[in-house]
Amino acid sequence: MGKKKLDVMAKEREIFINGQLDEEGNIVVPGCVRNGIDEKSADKIFDEMSEFAKYAFNKSHAACYAVVSYRTAYLKAYYPAEFMAATLNSYLGNLDRVPQYIDECKRLGIEILKPDINKSQERFTVENGKIRFGLGSIKNVGSVPVENIVNERKQQGEYKSFTEFCERIAETQVNKKCIESLIKAGVFQDFEQTRATLIASYEAIIDTIQSSKKKGFDGQVSMFDLGTQEEKEEREKHKYQFEEYEELQERELLSMEKEMLGIYISGHPLEKFKELIIHSTNIDTMDLKLIVNKISDDNEIDEIDVQGKTKFVDGQNVKYAGIITSIKKKYTKNNKIMAFITIEDLYGTAEIIAFENTVISSGKSLIEENIVIVDGRLSIREDAEPTIIANEIKDLGEEKPNAVTFDITDYSEEEKNRLRSAIKYFSGDKNNMNVQVKIGDEIKVCGAIYYNDKIKEVFDSIKNSVNHF
Figure 1 (spheres, helix red, strand yellow):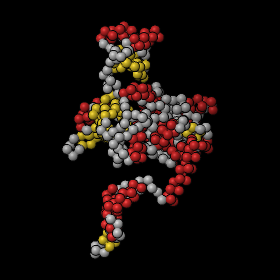
Figure 2 (cartoon, rainbow, N blue to C red; figure 1 turned 45 degrees about the vertical axis):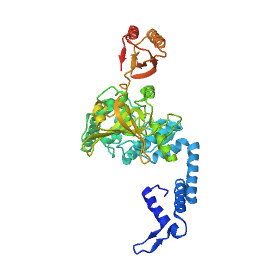
Figure 3 (cartoon, rainbow, N blue to C red; figure 1 turned 90 degrees about the vertical axis):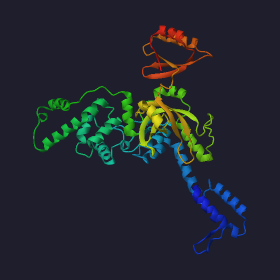
Figure 4 (tube, rainbow, N blue to C red; figure 1 turned 120 degrees about the horizontal axis):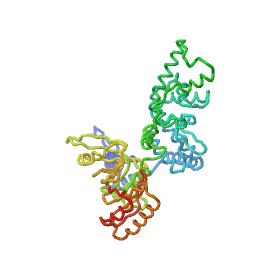
């Protein structure tokens, strides 16, 4: 009854009221009617029990929950970093669960430190009230390689360079795939080479080390074994050849971190678009989570009020924006294509369902790691997570046909002041165009103005850098 299995409860209602007979007609359960209780009263009693079962626990069960809740609350209140580190460690290696607890750390004001080859342990650890990512939480890095890396560091001291690290773990169970994952996760960030350089060079360096060790076993002497100690040290510096590359773009680095750690830790691709997203959408992942909580608490889905916002109802038109993290396409029984799209905003992920017409019309935007805005219908069901049925999916920015963007990256202070004055002068009750300013890759929303061809000429005279979305 407490599990709310409606089909089982309907069967039990019949037994409760009218009883139950076995195959031979013997009375197994007499039921209320046989005990002198009329059917109407019995039905009412069952309804009351059913309603009570929604929140009732037996005393021993409730007492256990109370003790666990008290202890958990105490630890979280007085030892938040240690408590959250322990919680994260309970889901070590589970990239699906770790991000939500990282979000809770951020909410509590606990800083999350990147994994570091000389500071990270296998598990999450606490450093001066901050939580350090463990090496064991990195994708494709198993517990045995991490144990080897940490033990070597404890016994022989910190790793001084990438090549020294490779030399010291060459005879352990740390393979190329593991080292590649460590590079992508950014654990060697304090060494002089860029991540792009390490990705391009690590295989050749490992091959060189393995080849050198094999020659050593065969009793061969290389040029690096000859000469004075100073000469040996100088030659050692040039022993390995790095393919030098400039660092990758921030978005590429963040993408690799997300792949390896399950979250964006150095930043978020959407951070620079935060203000634009706020002005372009009316729902986010936090709202969706609150809807789930409301359904659980109230068991009502007709109308849900989320923190004073407009009430969310099933079928309501919504706009949601984020970065596409996965796309799964399938065909229906009618041989029509549909897609299940996972889109992440600054607070979590949401599932978007797109049917054939939307998949076809939005094809150019349906690319993983693309930043999009979804115009769709909210679907709220008691037995499922809230989803959005997409009507249209576009690149973020395309949904603003009535927006003008001023690229002020190269503006002088005088030109910025003139633009600021013009925006203020042409804003008023008849605003028909949203205004955005672009600085480098960042776009900021800055109000609205009344805009036509003649007014466009005024802005063009400030500097010819007006682009329309």
